[in-house]
Structure formats: structure tokens, C-alpha cells
Image (cartoon, rainbow, N blue to C red; front, side):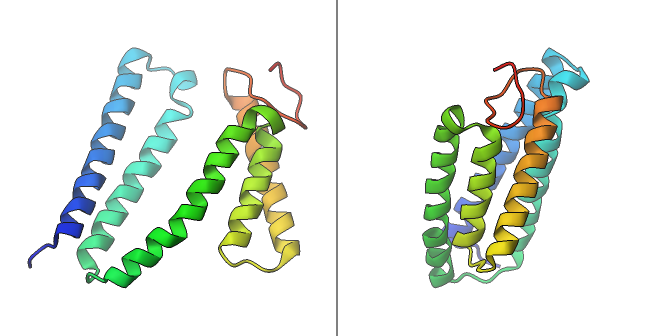
Length: 150
């Protein structure tokens, strides 16, 4: 089973991400092993490591296809652009409105055409996540609709 350069690079990147996430979680835990400190870090670290493991397994099973890889890169660029816009706009439009808009644009970009579904899903998800983070994080966040000390 010979591995191509692309697969080796993919595995190397997955390994680097996994090692960084493991180091970051260990460092945060070592610094302050409290629920308040780890409430955000632990779930994200676990999900990221799980996604890295799933991608590693998927990569082992998948046959190499250059055209599929180019399509994947082409599909990723618009997502990176809207995510960058999302992050940069949070200070101005707030986490709640920004998250709702990001989800709506993301769904539309990935082919969802039912506007009722886009609006319902993005509003519900955006508001639930915003409320959760506004209640759970120990520091204020910029919000437009939810009250905050920001």
C-alpha cells in the first residue's frame, strides 16, 4: 500500500493539528483545571480530535482522486471568505446576529434553496448558541439582541 505525497501531507497535517490540540488542552488543564476554564476548551478539543481521527480513517480508505481534491479546495475558499467576514464583523453586529447570518449564508452557499428552512434553522441555531455562550462564558461578548455587559 503505497501512500502518495498528498496523502502523506494530509496525514502530517492531521497529526500536527492533533498534537497542537492535545498540547493546548493539556496546557489549559495544567494551568487551571476548573470547569469555568475548560467549559469551552474541552468540548472543542474532543470534537476536533474526533474529527481528525475520522478524517485519518477516511483518508486511509479513500482512493486518490486529483479532481475531487480540486473541487474540495474550490468549495472551501468561499467558506473561508465568509468565515473571515463573520469573525471580523462580530465586534460590529454582535455574536447573535453574526452567527445567524453566517449560518444562513453557509447553508445557501452549500445548495440549500428552501428559504423557510434557511431562515428557521439559522435563526434558531444562532439564537440558541448565542444564549448558551452568553450564559456560560465568564466574559462578556458583543451581542445585538441579548443583553450583555460588553
